[in-house]
Image (cartoon, rainbow, N blue to C red; front, side, top):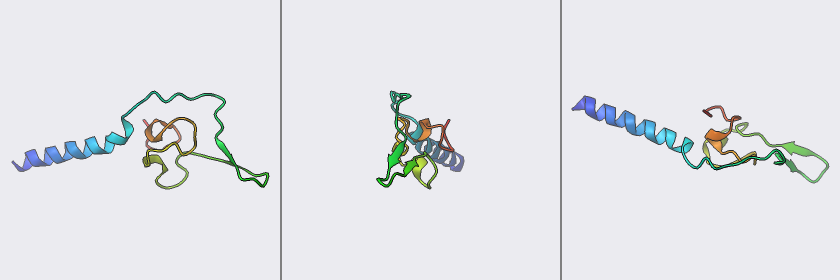
Length: 79
């Protein structure tokens, strides 16, 4: 009985951890996507996915390249 509960807990944890990586893959990217942000003082900041803690698990397209978290190759845990 304890083994069954342990197996079920492992399955649930695996399912929940992969839930952020599974979803709509209809996200299209284009080569003319602007991944920069103008600060207004002639300085351009290039945005990168995964350069700050939590960006690869927040469900957002932080670098605005059309790819979200697990679909973005710039995230450490992307497949």
